[in-house]
Length: 121
Image (cartoon, rainbow, N blue to C red; front, side, top):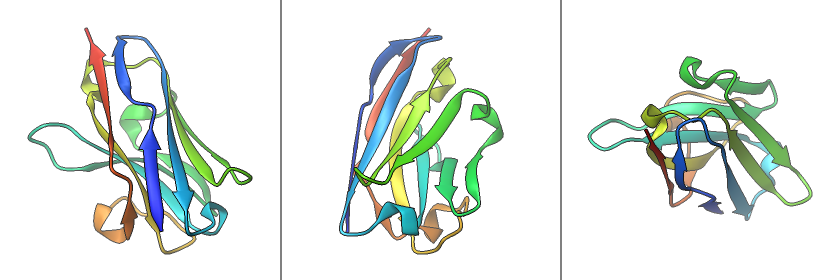
């Protein structure tokens, strides 16, 4: 299984980015797929996920971020709107070997390489 995250970049406060996570070796619709982020000096934190129970988000991104999935392309997306400087981090996609999501990174078995998102003030 391989996950390839892309789409990061530098954006001003209030801007938008869409991250993509292309997956090879498994069918994304059969697993929970999560997005996490890690800022310098901080632990990796749950951003959101998509699974059989739908989509779920951490409180700080609710209403601004949207996760979607294209089964034909076997790709998961993270649309990020109204970005804030505190959203600056390396963003990772990950697969959980389960239908349902979890907020703990240890519950995910495959990870993408990460893509940097920087929001300037």
